Length: 231
Ligand SMILES: [Ca+2]
Image (cartoon, rainbow, N blue to C red; front, side, top):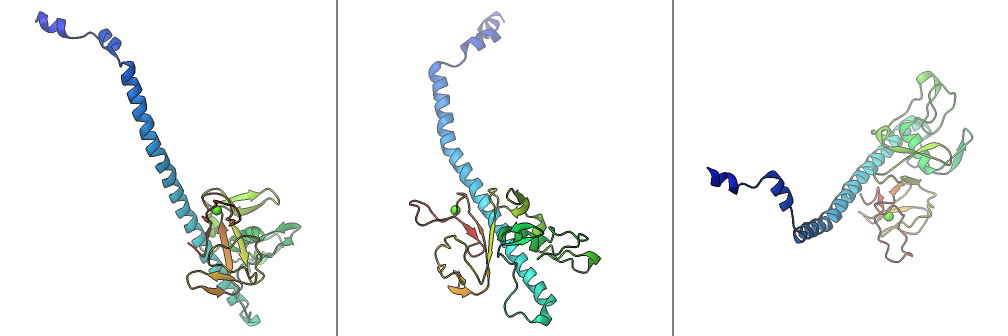
């Protein structure tokens, strides 16, 4: 009985026993090694997930553009347009505000800029009387947007928080490098899947994980841009 009591260390004795300096250094070393292994792979996993999300967003917007085009073809069938009517991207002034492709894309696919009842109309056609209330298409109204500080209009953003840009043919002059498989001719863009030109088509582009549009003139820059052609 007495021996058992003497052999048990007291709470205080256990606390003062603690870890030695070497044990602490070993633990810290192990934590550092594990961190150096895990953190980069966690960052890479997030990057892969956000890239996949952005591809899905651009796929959704691509589908919305197709739906817009088909509805415009039905509405304007009497006029028999000779080319598909995708959302326009030519910059212009509407209601006193300068809009570029990225703003027009939101307006065309959601129709939210010109509210019904305000007496104005735009590419999204929101008019009084409830007769021209086109869109939204393909869930585009659920895609995240940010307000462009230059004109206070919404623009779609990718999963990295960068604006998604939009350009439509046939006057295709984006100022961006179109990447492998794309011709430099400003009148059309190429479909890398078939290596055939898509006359009068459109280009939706995210700068991708690096947040910058690819430029082959910048050494060491890889093309991670995400578009409706490489999804
Ligand atoms: Ca990029």
